Amino acid sequence: MKKSARFENRVGYILYPATFKDSNGDGVGDIPGIISKLDYLKDLGINLLWICPLFQSPMDDNGYDVSSYEDIDPRYGTNEDFKRLLQEAHARDILVLIDFVLNHTSDEHPWFQKALADPNSEERGYYFFRKGRIGKDGKILPPNNWKGFFSTSVWEQIPGTDDFYFHIFSKKMPDVDWNNPKLRDRYYQIARHYLELGVDGFRLDALAHLGKDTSFADSSLQADENGLVYDTDRFSNRPEVLSYLTDFKDQVFSHYDCLLVGEVGGNVTPSTALTYSSFESGPIHMVFNFDTAWANGAYGSIGKPDHEIKTDVIELKKSFRRWYEACNGKCDMPIYWENHDHPRVLSQYGSIQYREESAKALLTTLLFMYGTPFIYNGDEIGMSNCEYEKPEDFFSDVNARNEILSLRQRGFDDATITHYMNRTARVNARTPMQWDRSENAGFGPKPYLNKINQNYLQGVNVQDEYARFESVLNFYRYAIAKRKEPFLAAQVAMGKWDLLDPNHPDVFAYTHEGPELLVCIANFRPYTTYFSFYYNIKDIILHNYGDVIFNNHVFELRPFECFLLKA
Ligand code: GLC
Image 1 (cartoon, protein in one colour):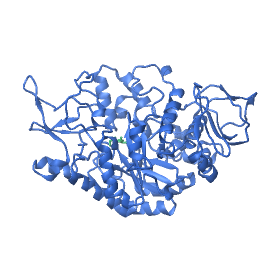
Image 2 (spheres, protein in one colour):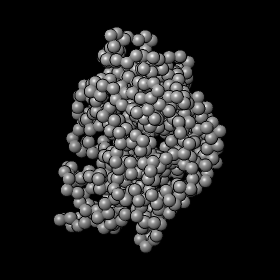
Image 3 (cartoon, helix red, strand yellow):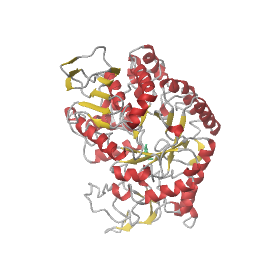
Image 4 (tube, protein in one colour):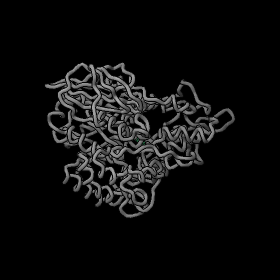
């Protein structure tokens, strides 16, 4: 559906609370910490926040395993702190989306506890319980051969019984059954509660997976060494998802002026995504796809030499075009390089060597694309992956932990695993935010969860970045302000978008047609390349080098040089 006017022209910021800012010295970022940085965010030009889950949680998956939706986790603060956060954000015209986990609860949630304790309880029907199968040797086997996202079977046996419950993420995150109207009603009540409290909307977590193939029949795709099959179509973007969302909209969302951004994940086609979010009939406003997140070949690259990990610029451009062509005029879409589930984009598509140039080029390319841009916290100061030393360094993340165990089982040695995880692990995006040069980069007196990137001592921190006129941060501030100027905002939203020289292997360039042609050109390589350009340059709006080399209609583009210009 169409978002209302108050959500127009917003630049989003994805905030990972555990490692953002610790106000009370317990080592965990918290809500008062976020409040203390709202002026910073406003100054950056942010006017929409997506905050990763703040609900009460045993933190098996760092908050995505919720044990009470009605309560803020004490590590993050109190329910009163949360209300204050909403007030303080709104006072600065920053709208707040909270992360709403709908696919599963924690196994410590009272619903699941009741379901376990009493097979006849209402709550038993909120989850998927099935009997195991008897193997040849009389041993009880899981009900089917499916593998989940965190490298294990989707089934967990309840000790002392032949019953199993279903979970596509960790075993501490049992999936709920959206086919059950009573379960749906529970979630509707929670949504109403937060909308009444004043939240401006939700990022709907793992939305793609609300519908499952409840025949739970074995998959016949290729099995792994443990006999498990990674057949995500069995629990991704199935037709029921649309009906669940439509009901949610009718019962709840349509009664509030809110913004709904769903996570629909990998393998989703633009046409399915449109059914969720089209202006005409979609029950929600926009959906995040993953297609543009892994175009450097790092994902699944274990054992590959570094030189094979290189951004496929042509494929990346094609992905954006595919989504634009499907969505233009039909739905809004969120545009992002990275979130808390990915390694740092600077280490993926950018360059440590050309930190400043590449951070600016990536931002410019993202910000002026069709859609609603979302920036991940830390990218505005050019944060990068951390370079861990051993597999255990990634264990704060259940996904990484399980993946590492499975890679060891497949025979990979620790050095190879560490190298691979340094490329791909989402822990890289969850290191403490670097505020200044004081101890622990100004995050707080105790480092939490993940190692701090020591480059905060070399100027990669907010304070130093502020002080330097040409810094990444000051470029962000300027560029975001430009993005919101009515003329440019209208041209990005309405001007026909197209790639320029789509087959150029190194340069990502696009245009928006309008009263004037708006052109973005970015070299995505750490070396010089050339780009033919036959228009008259009328005005350079953004540029990340001190001078321009343009002769005979050809730009000489130095490493990660980028332009936003009018022609
Ligand atoms: C989403 C979240 C991710 C989490 C998963 C399970 O993909 O972004 O962090 O692990 O859902 O809730």
